[in-house]
Structure formats: C-alpha cells, structure tokens
Length: 480
Image (cartoon, rainbow, N blue to C red; front, side, top):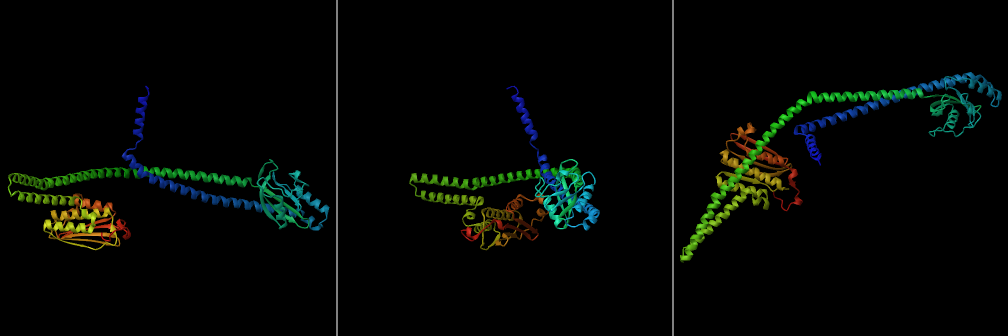
C-alpha cells in the first residue's frame, strides 16, 4: 500500500524516540527512589493531616452537640417552670390541670421548627403544635427511615427521669427528614413524656465546612511538597546526576581498558600454550618421527640397531606424554577434581619448588566441610597466580602456603620473604593483572582478599565465606 512505508518509518522513529538512552535510564533509576520516597512522605503527611483534622472535627462536632444539649435542657427547664405550679397542685386524675398544661406547652414554640411535644407512656401524642396530625394518635413502635426507634425511646428516657435521643424527623417547615436531637423529661404522676428537640443542620453544615477546609489544606500541602520536590530535583539532583554520568563514563572507559587487558592476557596465554606445544611437543614428536623412520630403515636392512632406535622413539613418546600432561595440568589440574583442593595445591607447590628451586612449605588441615567447586577453582587460581608473581618479581628464597577452614569459612595464606610489592599497593591503577584477577575472583565469591607487603616480603590472604562450604553429610570425603 502507498501509505505503508511512511507508516513503518514513523513507527521505527517512534520506537527510537521511546527507547530511553543510557543517561535517561540512569536518570530514571536515580529519580524513581526519590519520587517514591516523596510520594510515601506525601501520603503519610496527608493521612496524618486527615486524622488530625478528623479528631479536630470530631471535637468540634461534640462541642456543638453538647451546646445543643445544654440548650435543650434549658428549654425543658423553662417549660417546666411555666407549668409546674399547675402540675404541682393537681392530682393524677385532674383533667382540667392536664388540659391547662397542654395548652401552655402548645403555645410555647420557638424559631421556625421549635416546639414542645407530649406523649403519654402508652405512646399517644398529646401535644404537637407544629405537627397537629400527630395529636391523639398512638405512635408506639414508631421508627425513623434508618430504623431507629423514636417514640419508644423518648418514653424510655422519660421513665428514667430524662435523657437525650438522636434520630431522623420531618422538619415542620419543609416536610423533609433531617437529623434531630431531643431531650425528654418525665411527669411521673401523670405518666407523661415532655420534651423538645432541635435539628442539627447547622452542626452538620459546620462539620462539612471544616472537612472541606481540611481537604483544601491537604491539597495545598501536597502541591507544596510537589513543588519542593521538583525544586530539589532541579537544584540539587541534576548536578549530582551529571557528575554520576561523568563518573560512569570514566568507569566505562576503565572497564573497556580492563576488558582489553583481559583479552591481551588471554592472547598471551594462548601464545604461551602455542609456544610450549611448538617448542616442546612439536620437537619431541619430530624426534620420535626420525627415530621411528630410522628404526624402519634399519629393520628393512636387517640391522640389529633398529631396537635401539625403537627404544629411543618410545622414550621420546613417553616424554611427549609427560609434556602434554604438564600443559594440561597447568590449564586444568585433574587433582582438583579427583582429590580436592589440598592435594592440588600441594602438587602445585611441589612442581613450583622443583622448577624454580625456591623452598616451599605447604600446611593444611582436614576440613570439617568441603568447599564447593567455584571456591576450589578460585583458591587454586589465586595460589597459582601468587606463585607465578613470586617466581617473576619477588626474588624470594622461601614461600609458605597455609590452607585451613575456620568458623567463618576457609582461609588460604601465602607468604614469601621477597622484596615486596609496596609500589603496587600504593598505586592500585598500576597493579598488574595478577592482583586484579585475584581480587575479582574472590569478590565474585563474596569473600575478601588482603595483600600486605613490605621490604621483608608479601603476604596474600584469601578468605571464602561459609556460603561456599558444603555440609559434611553432602560430602563424600571430609577433606577440602
């Protein structure tokens, strides 16, 4: 299709744009923890602010309701004072006195929705001046829309001598339900419950306004935290990020140089193996070939000296076999896999002493736990590298190799009486590949490498942690 190619080019362009660069990845890696921390702090601040505000709002609501309760109690007290003289002089069956009291209470209205009500203890309403449809009807068992008992609870509080009750009730002015709190007292001689109530619209409005203010403060706090965080990122973090990127580039350059040195070392090792194969194995094989050809010609001529030529060829072949074994042992010692680390290092020290003439003392103890394969290889290579450094640079006469296990893992200590490597320790950048390889091998195992050097010799200590020790029950043998 005509538009397919431009679309593909656009998608490739978007893919390139969406793929973050190294600097962007580093920026994201560094900023995400900070943003997560700030977000957590913001959420904590918001939660604490809301909890504190809720406590303050609850205290305000309690205070306003207590004020309403005091106001209700005062209303009831004033009403009782208005009719008490009639009530006190009357008998329980005095109908005229009861009528007089109901008239007094019916006339006592206040505000738009304030009035006094009277129920007898049977549940019949006797006074409700602003809701006359209630009068003379029995409302026992009446509950509001939320299921809260109303009349029964009012009578119950009156029987106790007086008390408060909160419920939903229709406002006389609007006919809609609203939250109401009432105080009801009892006229025990007449079995009447007399009380009044006030609607809590103003209290609820005050609480809602307080909550709205709280939410506004929380949002404002969150915005300020976001602004401060952004400022911190711009003013503090970006220079540090630039420095980190610069350091990372420097580290990358060093890593590239180190990688090149590793490649060079590998090429040197390959060259060494190639030279040994050419100088020793190749020459031995050529000599064997000449000896066998000579034996062949002598056997064809019936010369009895053919046997001597065959013996010479066999002897050369044995030498070639030993040379191949030596080269193979240098690359990967079979003793390390067959007998363990101790015998392998012992064979290494014996060959080193025989080749260089340097006296070597090897000490080891039986390990309670066996080392795993990675630890054995690492310690063997460290010992091999250390002895190579002694041979090439130390000028030592005596070397001590100590291998043992302890509570924290395994420790190998190699000490010589040579001239030391103080200049290498003082300048790690100039350290050779030998020490770098040792450090990287032991660091890979999570262990520690210590190099202590002076004019009287060098000590190298390599420690492997317990995580590389195998339990005795998993080991076929108890030695390292």
